[in-house]
Amino acid sequence: MDRKRKKRTSNKEWKSPADGDARIAKMKDGRTHLAHKAEHAVDLDTGAVVAVTLQGADQGDTTTLDETLGEAGMAVAEQVGREVELRPNEEPKVNVAGIEETVADKGYHSGAVMQRMKGYGVRSYIPEKKQKGQRNWTGKQAEQQAVYANRRRVRGEYGKSLLRRRGELVERSFAHCYETGGMRRCHLRGHKNILKRQLIHVGAFNLSLILRKLLGAGTPREWKNRAGQVFSQLLRFLLGLRKAVSPIWLHPPAAGPRKEPSWPCNT
Image: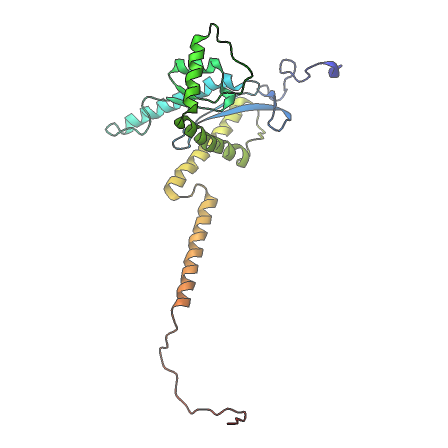
């Protein structure tokens, strides 16, 4: 009976008895799993993760963008308030105006998203998906203006540079937290528990950026390797110095009678 249905893995019909927040989703490798969707908001100047959200895996990118952007805006506003409180007479290192630009991949592009970004007062740099034919803009003048403005910004040199930095910094945070950090497969249940674990991972990632800025090494393993490299370079320098300096006799060898060779010599 189950084989005759057109869609056998629907979230409306199936639910995990162990984790009610998990949703059926198709993974990047084509497999189907009960999963959760994580999003990062990354500062493109420093590479630090500003906000992390965990949402249902059945929601699209155009739906989840608003929550992530809101969390990032609240984090930036909190940081601005802390800067004013701790250093009132100094120039703040955080943008007082908050988030002014948003850079994302083409999965987040839609006319409605562009219109919402314009309403938020945020300049968007989101590439478009390839579409067949021409779009019908009848009755969608505001949406058309927002889409065309985003297209113009993306095609500029500044927009291209932002997209290159997005591919470098945003994807790096995902690689460190989920690939190297092992968070791609999580054994916790519930959004709250997984989000706590996720915040620990992201906090460690941001801490590595601070350590790399101060010490030149972001992880203890890298710091150990740096120390080993310094020791090996010092040892190599001392060995080279030893070869370069000729031996010096402190006492001349004692002079004695010249020994004749023991073999016969014909002259």
